[in-house]
Image 1 (cartoon, rainbow, N blue to C red):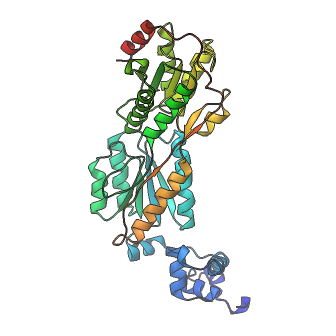
Image 2 (image 1 turned 180 degrees about the horizontal axis):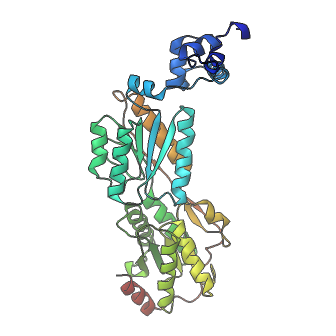
Length: 370
C-alpha cells in the first residue's frame, strides 16, 4: 500500500482529529481487524511477517492501545503479577528476568511485588493485583497454604507457584533435596567427615529440604547424625545472616566441621568474609558450598562452589504455564515441573585437612544454635 493511500490518522490527531484506531492500523497494514486484534491479544497466533507489518503500521500511525477498553472487552489487563519473597535476593532478580522475557514475547508487562517474607504484605499485594485484573499471578509464597491463593483461583485468576507445589496448581521448583545431597556428597568425596549446615530459619521449606539432602548423603556414606552441626540465623538468608553465623562458628574456638553447606549463596558469602578476615584459610582449613549460583558467587574474591538452579529458565517456564492456563483455563492440565540442580565447583572447596575438629567443639556449636 502506498504512503498516499494510508489513512493519515497521526496527522489528524496532530491537527485536532481523533487518535488512530485499530481500524486505521488494519487498513495501513493491509490486514483484517481480527488479525490486528489477534496481534494485540495473542501475538504468537499471527505469522511473523504479518506481525512485522502491523508493528510498522502501529509505529507509523502512533497508535496507542486503549487499555481500559481492552480490559472492558476481555475482563483482564495485559499484565501479570510476580510476587517474590525478597527482591534484594539475586535469585529472584534472575527469576524475574526470565519471566519478563516470556511476558514480553506475549506483549505482557510484569508487575513485580516484594512481600518481604511478610504474609500480611503478601496478601495485600494479591488483593491489589486482583483489583487491577491482572491476567494471572506468579508467586513465591510466604506460606504455601495462604487462603489468598485459593481466593484468587475462586475469582478465576490463574496462579502458578514458584519454588513450591500444591495439588491442582501449576508449579515450578527445583529439587532441593537433590541439591542438598549434591553439596554434601561433594564435600564427603573430598574427605570431609564433619559437616556444618549454615542457614537462615528452617521454617523455610527450601532450607528444610536442602538439609534433608545433606542428611541423605551422610547416611549413604555411613556418617552418623552427630557428624553434622546445624546453625540457624535470621530469616532472610542474606549476607548479614551469614556474617553472624561466621561469628558464631569462630566463637566455638575450633570450627565444628571442615565442610560447610550453606542454605544459599548470600549466607555463604557473608560467612566466608568473616572466616577469611579471621585468618581461616578457605579451602585449606575449611571448605564452603553455597546454593543458587547467583552472579556474585562467581565474581567474589574467592569464587564460591555452589549448587546451581536454572533461575531464568524457572521464570520463563512459570510464565509460559501461567499464560497457557489464562488463555485455555477449561482445557488446561496443571503441571508440576521440577528442575534438577547442578554442582558448580570453584575455589571455596578442597580436600579435608588432615586433622579433624574435636568432638567438644562440635557439641559446643550445636548447643549455641539452640
